[in-house]
Image (cartoon, rainbow, N blue to C red):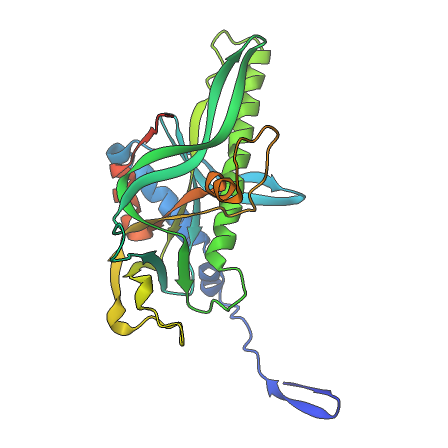
Length: 293
C-alpha cells in the first residue's frame, strides 16, 4: 500500500489487487479462447454457410506497429476481416434517431466497403481499389453512435478506435491480395489477374447489442437527457456501424464540392454481430454492388 503526497497534501492510498496467477484466469483474461472457439465453430458449420477460414492471426503492419487480424473468411469474391471482442461492458447501445416529422428510420441493406477490381488500360490490367456502395443482407439497423459503459466525455469511444483499426486492417489485406495477384502475373501464369473482391470489416462480440430509437426533438436542451418515455430499446442480433473512422482526405482530381460530400465519401460500414448469432448471420449473408448512376 503506497501513500503519495504533493504540496503537503496527502492523497488517499489505493490498494491494487494483484492479477491472479491461476492458469485458467490467465487464459480467460486473454480472450484467445473466445477467438479460437469462434474460428472452430465457423469451420464446423461450413456446410451451412460455405465460408472458408482463409487465415488466422493474420499479420499486417500499421505504420511501424505489427498487428494481427483474428481471422479472415472467404466466399466467392468477398473477404470478411473479423475481429473478436469480449468486452467487460455487457451492453453496447446504438443510437438511431427516428424523427416523427421526417422520414422514419428503418433497417437498411446499405453498406459501404472497400472494393478491389480489375481495370483495363492501354498498358494492361491494373487493380483499382476504393470505397464502393453495396447492398448487404440480412438488413439491420444502421447507426453512427454507440454508447458504452465507462465511456468518458471527450474520449474517443472504444468501438471507434477498434473499428478504425479494423478498417485499416481490411485495407492491408486488400493490398496484400493485389500484391500476390500481381506477382502471379509476373511469374507467367496464363490466367488474368483475378482481382475482383470486397473487404468487409466485422466485429463479433459477446456484448449484448441494443438499438435505442428516439425522436431528437424530445430531448430537452436544458438537461440534454433523453426522457424515459422518449426512447424505444430493442435487443438486436447485429447492427451496421457507419462513419468515417479516419479523417477524410482529398485526392488529386477529387470532384467533391464541399466537406459534406467529402465526409460522405469517406464513410465506411462495419458489421457488429453478437457472437450467438454469428453463424446465422453468415448463413443469411448476401451482397451485391450498387450500380453507379
